[in-house]
Length: 177
Image (cartoon, rainbow, N blue to C red; front, side):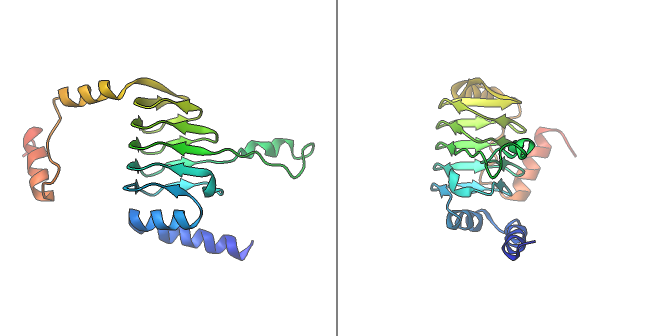
């Protein structure tokens, strides 16, 4: 095993214990383009982070994988030696990516999008879209999502509350003693 590989795996394990700002700095040093005001949780970026571009104000939840190569070429190693297949990934501005998504090579996500948890995303997706599923597809517009949030009976304004205040408000709303 290569010493650089071992060092990289140890670095990634330590990175998982740090905050979002430190993660952003690390991935920028590895060549990834990351915009301003991004929040990156514990995410797995592929072996070619320089093929990934993330816009401004993007939040990526834990467990998401960004894959920039097609490892299935392995099946053709006897016939196609020494070749690999790569693709870029571009995420627009003001995007939220839910837990445990997989973003595949040659994917472009437009501005102002939500990608639902567990989605497998490949291809081009227009701005102002809510994207979910396996395979992921546009299910409705962001304006529809906003309307659904505002009409949700469990919509609570807890932003800015202390942990104690927030817990109290949520328990009261759900009638939990």
